[in-house]
Amino acid sequence: MTTAPNDPATAPHGRPPVVDLATWQAARDELLVREKAHTREGDALAAARRRLPMVELDGTVEVVGPDGPVPFLDLFQGRDELVVYQHMWYDGAPHQGQCEGCTTTAWHLKDAVYLNARGVSFAIVTTGRWDEVASYVEFMGYTQPWYSVRDVDMPVGMGHLTCFLRDGDRVFLTYSTTGRGNERVNGSMALLDMTPYGRGEAWEDNPEGRPAGGSSCWSWRSDADGNATWGPTSRPVPQWTRPGATPVETLGRRGHHH
Image (cartoon, rainbow, N blue to C red; front, top):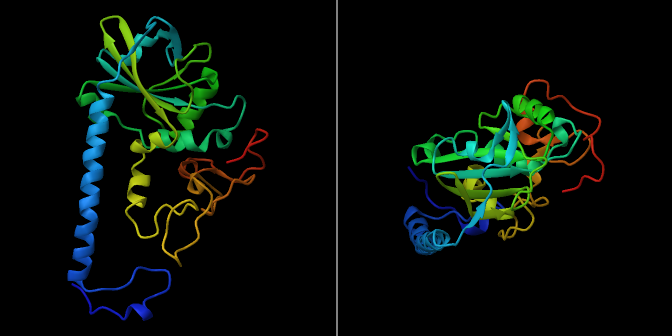
C-alpha cells in the first residue's frame, strides 16, 4: 500500500524525502548493516560486563522498608541476583519536587516479572525518610519494593542502576551505571529514537528543517497541558496521571534547574 513518490523538491519541509518502496528498502538495508554491528558491539560489552571483578559488601546493614528495618540481604528475596535503582531524594519536597529523571526511570521499572523469572530481584532505594518515601510511592502507584537507605553508606551514589550478587549470606557489588547508562530501562527513549523526529532534544543530530529540540530531557517535566517546562506549575510527566495532580505554586525546593 504505497503511493507514487513525490518530487523531493516539493516534499513537505522538515520531513524525510518521499521515495518509492524499493529506494526506501535499499536505504533501510544499508542502515541495517550498521544496526547489526551496533548490536554485536553491545553483546561484546555485555560479555565484558560479566567479566568484571566484584567487591564484597556488608549484607547485614539495615535499610528501612514498609515492615521497618531489614537487612540489605532481604532485598534479594531469596534470589541470587539483585538490580537496584538508587532514586535521588529531596527532603521535605512535595511529590512534584522530586527528581524528574529518577521518576522517569522508576516509572519504566514498575514490573520485574521477567527479571524474577531469571532469578533476579529488583528494588528501589533512596535517602528519603521512610514516611515521606511511603507517601510518594503510594501517590505514584509504584508496585516494586522501595527502601530508605538514609543512614547507610552506599557504595555508589544516587541516580545509579547497580547490580549485586549473593552467595549465601555474602553480598557483592558487580556493576553500576548512571546518566545515559540508565537509558537501557527506558523503553520510551528507545522508541523515540526510532521515530523521524527523535527525542526532540537540542543535542540530537537532525536533518535541516526538523522541529527544533528543547533542552536535554525536556520531556521529563510538563505543565498540566503537557507543555515541557521547569516552571513553578510543572511536574514529572507521569504525575499528571495520578489522582490530585493539580497545578501547583512551587516545586517546594530552592535552586532547582535542569
